Amino acid sequence: MSDASAASFDFDLIVIGAGYGGFDAAKHAADHGLRTAIVESRDMGGTCVNRGCVPSKALLAASGRVRELADAEHLRGFGIHAAPVRFERQKIADHANQLVAAIRTNLTRSLERAGATILRGKGRLEGPQRVAVREASGIERVYSARDVIIATGSDPFVPPGIETDGRTVFTSDEAISLEWLPRWIAIIGSGYIGLEFADVYTALGCEVTMIEALDRVMPTFDPDIAKIAARKLIDGRDIDARAGVLAKTVTPGSPVRIELVEMASREPVETLEVDAVLVATGRVPVSKELNLESVGVTTNRGFIPVDEAMRVLVDDKPVAHLWAVGDVTGKMMLAHTAAAQGGVAVDNILGHQRLIDYRSIPAATFTHPEISSVGLSEADAKALAASNGFELGLVRSYFKANSKALAELESDGLMKLLFNRSSGEVLGAHIYGLHAADLIQEIANAVARRQSVRELANEVHTHPTLSEVVEVAYKQAAAALA
Image 1 (cartoon, one colour):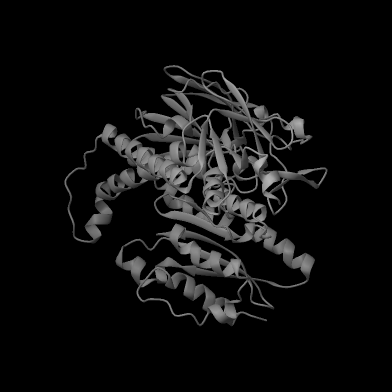
Image 2 (cartoon, rainbow, N blue to C red):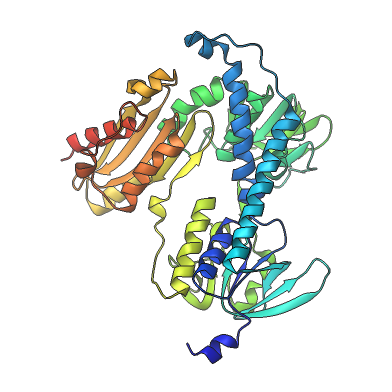
């Protein structure tokens, strides 16, 4: 491209949205010499930093300590007798807020240091290679860019019939500020967000009722993992979990009224009166006000269609110079997926062809203990085995056989490994147990390299560590090869 045509644009790249996906894209682009602008109307860092992963991990860390100190039976196993545990809700909330502020500042500074321009306001497309930014004052400016990346993320989904007031009925957006501790809270949804908050609330002395519309609690998790994890994470706590039940209406107030009906028949079950309700029913893309029609893009339930290079698609064909990353693409709605997609988009903009590999991206739920997974579910692995004509291998490795887990008196856990019995290729893994979120990375790396358990079984792991749970699974899998 000649300098003259490059200079005819205000920027080489404009990124709409400064969440994890937009941030990584803008930083990567600026680091590689592209004149980059990033548009953000809310807090820098998006959901993850301000209303998601970061503050929730701070709450889980603090409440996890409270749970540990209050578990007299567990401590007795070590011969430890602790005094009754006391905590200050406000100080726990402050810890989360301070962490958010620190990470948001670091993020903003690193963008500025890389040379990116931060445009404060609401961004939308204004035809090909043009972005309009409406500032808080109402002033609107239109900028041109050779390439545009949409990274507008997602918001919590509130089903019809549920009314929120931000105080007695709220989503994860408000829950992370931990403004008060309801004596009895209902959590609607038993995915990772519902589970993490159930962990926080029960550790801090709240009673929880968990309402799941699908026919089993923890429906998004591997069924075997869900079964063993539920024993401790749900049955072992002050949680009354109900599956196959729909919250038809939720009315804020004191108390909050929840009208429950059977999911299948819509027959009334009962009306609950609780102190608060957390709505954790998933997330929806933020794409309505992007003026996508100005470039002919049609969304799918609000999600922007993209290919594996992150190019936006119209009728399955890429639109020139338009890209989308993160939750708004609806692929894997995780912060690190967004960041990876941002990197892939910018590499393609820079002329280095690269595709994303979703199979090797891990996911984790930061309960105590943790749950993690990577690669294919057992159902998807079975389908792949049937269509590709190979036999699926499956082995289980237990934490109760691990010296480190036994030393910690935390031997409740399971790893399930899926592999191709002919080639030995690792297809996926699902883990529940101590530090599962860290352990999954090793298998994610193997999946990324499409490695076989034949070579992995010979890799030496430190003894005694939890990583030996993975080693045992690899060895069992290698022994089971056809």
